[in-house]
Length: 506
Ligand SMILES: Cc1cc2nc3c(=O)[nH]c(=O)nc-3n(C[C@H](O)[C@H](O)[C@H](O)COP(=O)(O)OP(=O)(O)OC[C@H]3O[C@@H](n4cnc5c(N)ncnc54)[C@H](O)[C@@H]3O)c2cc1C
Image (cartoon, rainbow, N blue to C red):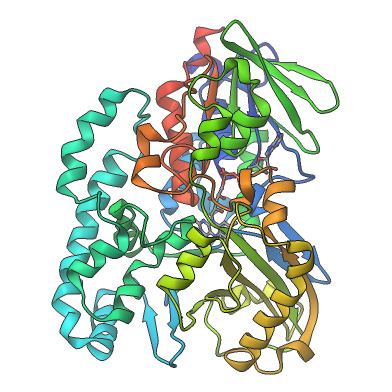
């Protein structure tokens, strides 16, 4: 295999790997497969790579559609290293501080950062009685990180034995508790409990239901920082695309896969919606895992992930995202702000359980021009505001609700952080759960795939090596370990242990 990689990068007869979808998981998988000797073709439905990290250029403003909080930068660095390069050659990652500015409905504020002294000072000001409990929570977070991320994040979990082996660790770490439940064992102040437990929302989960394994994020962020890619997250997408092309791989946009073709119980390639057939030695799907099984792999090949079982599974929330540019700047607004409404647990129940669109909301406001002014014309600001909403398992009619919902959010922002907002908007666009379903092919319009519940994690999640047919592999948010950039980059790393070396087919 080494010989193939080093000497024959452009050999057209190298074993062929197809990657369906160019989200971060798909691009990372392509780089890894290319480094292992495969000739890689990435097939993307949209007109540009990135998936949820698509970039909209509009009226002189640059809008990253999705991820902007970059944690665990070493996972990106590994991909550049595989190509003999350094991440810094192509992308500048700039640390952001505070990580998040959290603003409660009663006006209380909390600057959440990775600096232990600054965090201690914030907690002493906010809830002094919880300082010792916070320190113990961070120790617990580190212990969970060591096991949950370092040891289990890159295991394929495609046998029940793999799962049984980790049960003692999971019990010891109290993974049966929820994130909110675990945090509540360490701190008492109701607002501090929210500050330390909102992280699952970044990967689509309800803090009151998500396994406490996700408490590892607190330590991950402190250890490695929260970064922003200068020029926008799109720079990371472009950087990965260049790595793939440098390896002799191809990214074909406007190329939607209709079916994964199989012979016996082995994947042999894909058929596009145009009817074109592309043979491959291995097929990796970066499309949503539920969509991959429901729509791309015919039912006769499916024993575990039947339509019935997929329907029964629980899916992450969806998102309403409003991207807008303003003709003025709002210099007091931090890069990442959480604006929490009056209701928290009840609002989350509306979103995740009752699946109704509430008239109140909690928002995440992104102002990338706080770090990189080049993303807006001079004197202007670029924003997006994101509101967690029910997925399409509910019955909200987004065709009629989107604009009134946007107006309500705009009014709330005008009253709080962005005075006179409506008069200052110069460009605007929205993304609703319908876009997650119709544009990004996500079952039930879920923004983060299957929900991160303990009963849908590791062996219980659709496997990275398909349980259904040989030669098919899954990467991205809907497989192990889960959503978020560290999760999907790790899922690509898992493939190194289950996809055979290209030499096997050579
Ligand atoms: C608004 C938003 C903000 C977020 N913010 C953050 C953040 O700050 N930090 C963070 O770590 N995470 C964040 N996340 C989560 C993170 O973005 C995702 O978990 C991650 O990007 C998903 O990557 P993926 O590899 O699963 O692929 P996706 O990005 O889901 O891409 C899948 C691709 O497959 C393509 N596809 C689907 N079906 C087909 C087909 N049949 N044929 C061809 N192509 C197909 C789709 O068009 C898409 O391009 C955010 C998510 C959203 C939506």
